Image 1: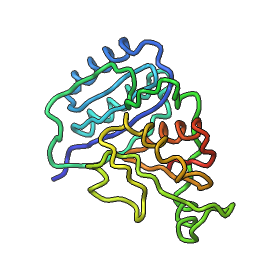
Image 2 (image 1 turned 60 degrees about the horizontal axis):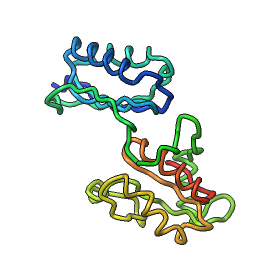
Image 3 (image 1 turned 30 degrees about the vertical axis):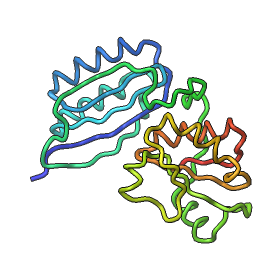
Image 4 (image 1 turned 90 degrees about the vertical axis):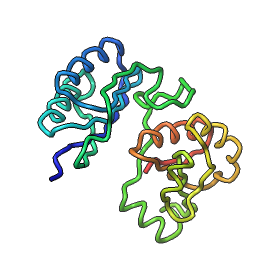
Length: 207
């Protein structure tokens, strides 16, 4: 019987006291006997947690009770066993490392494209303005190898910190096109889209 609830969640919002938040979440998660990891930084929170449904949902209530996290979105899945060995809460400079501190998704969000619109664009081969549409995979190479969109751009990056230089090296290939970035969970896509917009690529959307 599948009894373990797994959740993945992230939220970009300014956190004034990451250490204080981390300590509170560590105490709550430990009391609930959860397993997984929570990353806290000044730019927000990122977490992967697993446990019995009642305990996980109690932790989710605690997360959403934090200032600015009321609308925390969560992706759920179920398993027969807990996929994590321990429970950790860490304070980081970034909840997904890019090494570009000027990229602040909490303050500037790139507009997203809906699944229906993206499907229509891909079917017709261009967006509503007639621009060619390209899919850009923002994941690490080993993740891409598990599957990707047909004809998606893959720069074979080994870690997300390599993404900015890869964009700069291939910028000419993206000029004049609508670029739709995608990743696992969405967290990388948000930073990737903002970085490309700031680099001067005008039509970049996270999926």
